[in-house]
Image (tube, rainbow, N blue to C red; front, side, top):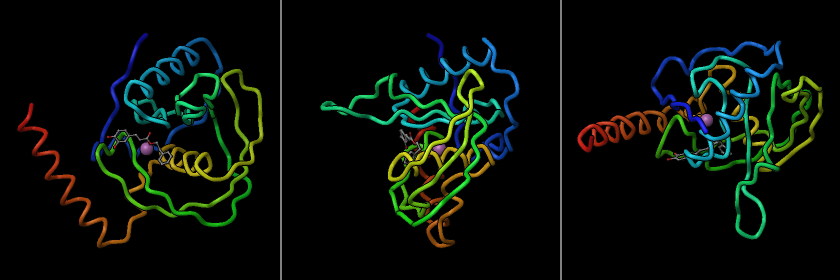
Length: 176
Ligand code: QAP
Ligand code: CO
């Protein structure tokens, strides 16, 4: 098992626009496995490649399921080169992000989306989804375009976030 370092805001690497994946080879598969380990170890349900400093259009989502609300590898979605082809409705959810640790904010997304994407072998799929999976996919696709959920906040809430985040970072430095 091998894990990667998760980059946090305000690191400018997160602003990169990620490039299309063209080679679906062993190197990609190894990277996907390392992303999965990193996501699980960090208590995440979603992770984009740029969050571990790789600017390629790859995202993982693994929502908890079953009696115990566990994250199972069989539920893992590996989404490569996604394109949203339909979107409708509106839904609010308290979002978080491994790159913005400790902060959660109410964000508006499309309720339902339909997308095309490729899996780790380059095989094309379409997926129609709503609710939490739809929200998670939209959050992760924003990462591929260099965007973070905090950029969707109204001005006053964004200002409040910046103040609180800076304060929390100072507290963290003290503890180190
Ligand atoms: C994106 O987010 C997402 O602050 C994935 O201290 C957002 O996995 C998917 C996390 C909304 C669905 C809905 C955040 C872990 C994980 C933190 C995450 C933290 C520890 C966030
Ligand atoms: Co995120």
